[in-house]
Length: 316
Image (tube, rainbow, N blue to C red):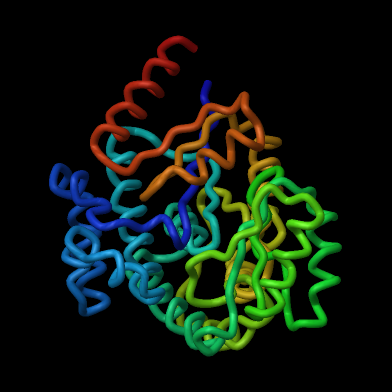
């Protein structure tokens, strides 16, 4: 028996042409792009299939495009009998997980994340905030260096991705100072990321407040499939907690490593990354090498994943 988790990528996974091949081969996937286009009033197929990198990099475009691509691919997996026992997503990907669990309607989710992207972009003036990836240090060493750099402004852990990889965020000067201190401490890498805002830091609280206002008007149901939250790495209890955690998530650290460990603790032995890229699959392998990981983003990876899972089911 395979126990399966579907995990969904966040901002940064986007690329021109994502989802095109699967949508052109499966009507169910193309329908998702059509629904997104109708709800947002933009041509989502043109944005994802033909848009250039600069257009896709705009946060209010990035978020709905990744969500749409992920859910389009999920529809094809479901068509082939692949249904998750638990779901999770990195930052933005948590919305895909909630759609997969039938807690939020897809059309509502795609409208939400477009506004979420705009609010996050507007929260901090351009150039005043940034993020950096730190590799090769333990969590407590990173935290200590951040405290030392805090005299230059806000600088906080934004993502705990996997052992030895933490992302930090905050005011640009404070992040730059932290990077220098982290390198002195022995970090293999401490480099600024090409992002437009300091996501998952307290500087984004105004974006969370705006998001809370629109979430009041969105229908949210209890999850039908368990969803593990970024904020606390625990299964979300009910529909009321979903809204609170989505607001908190904007300015809280993403506890991805803890989330994956807790999912594995539930007996999950197989993870499928659903959507563009394969970053999350790599994180899972760094967390636990014994876990089976797959990613599905095009026809080749779709067919390979389906064939592999069916073969394993036949052997059990």
